[in-house]
Image (cartoon, rainbow, N blue to C red; front, side, top):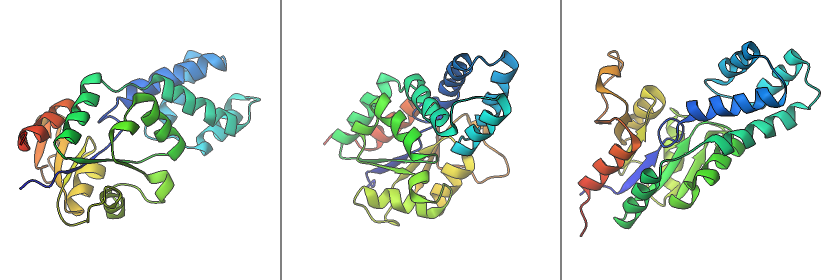
Amino acid sequence: MVQRLVLFDLDDTLVDRRKALAAAVTRFADRHRLTAAEREGVLGRLGERACLADFAALRELHGLAVPAGALWQQYAQHMAESVLCPAEVLEGLDALRVRGWRIAIATNGPGDVQRAKLDATGLAARVHAVCVSGELGFRKPDPRMFAAAVRSCGAHPGEGGWMVGDDPVKDIIGGRSAGLTTLWIGRAADWPATLPAPDRIAPTALRAIRLLLALTPEE
C-alpha cells in the first residue's frame, strides 16, 4: 500500500523561480533606473537565494534612497506578481487530494516571499501544509525540515511518503535521508553521476503528479 503523503519543493518544481526572478529584477531595475549591466548584477546576486542583507548591500552599491526594508518588500511584491503555476499542476494537486493524498510544500527561503508566491499562484489553497525554512530556522537538506513537513500533515516521520523536487542534494538526498521515496524533477542525463540515483525521475511537476496518481488509482 502506497503511503499517500507527498512533499513538494516550490521553486523550480511547482513554479519557475528563474523566470519569475528575471521578471521581478527587471521591474526592480526599471523602478530604480538601473542600467542593463546593473540589472544583470542584481540578477546574479539574487540568482541562488535572496535575503534582506542583499538589499542593504544593493542600496549602498547603487546609492538608492529607499530603505533596505522597503526594497525587500518591493522585491517580494514583484516576485508574487511575476510567479505562475500552470493550471494543469493546480488541477493535478486537486486530483491528488481527491485520491486521499496529504500534500505539503517544503521550501527553502524567507517566509514572506515564499508565502506571497504561494498565495498569488493559488498553491496555498491546494495543500494541507506549508513549511518554510525561514520560519523554522533550518533548511533542506536538514532532516528536520522534512520531519516538520511530514508532521504538519498529521503523519509521522519514518512511515513513508514521497519527496518531489528539482535539487539533487537539497530535495533528493535530503528526502532520502528522512526516509522518503524520492522523485526528481529533471532529465535522467542531467543527474549528477557522483550521487545515488533518485527512486523516480519526471521531467516536470505535472508528469510527477501523474505518476503519483497512477500509483493510487480511484477506488
